[in-house]
Length: 146
Image 1 (tube, one colour):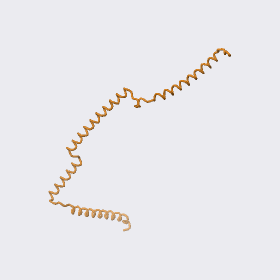
Image 2: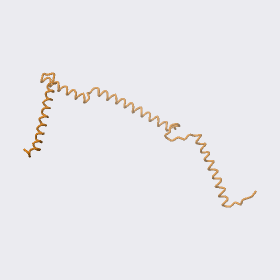
Image 3: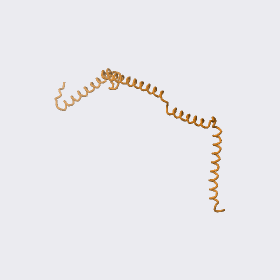
Image 4: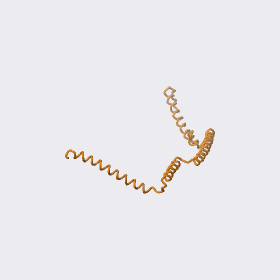
């Protein structure tokens, strides 16, 4: 056997080899540990802790209470809305009252003839307006020559 004298250089090489061996053993142990114990984040609930379980219970209680309040408010809104007519219903009721008043004044039940006559008159007015506008344009255009 050769005995190597213990110098600083030899000691450093020996220690670095031991260090490398220990690092490899540590990596193997970490892999074995990871295989045995599954990793999970604090938000992962596959293996919840006692604190997480308490938090979940509190959140469920709050959710249930909020849902009950929501149901109560919804029932209250439906009750109030059934008691009072909506804006659209009010408008329809007002227009119906106005129509009833007009019918009572005129003692007529059919306005369809009057509406048709008014539409015809209106169309005649539009035609007459268009004719006057056209005649003014013609007079401007040909005014120089006449």
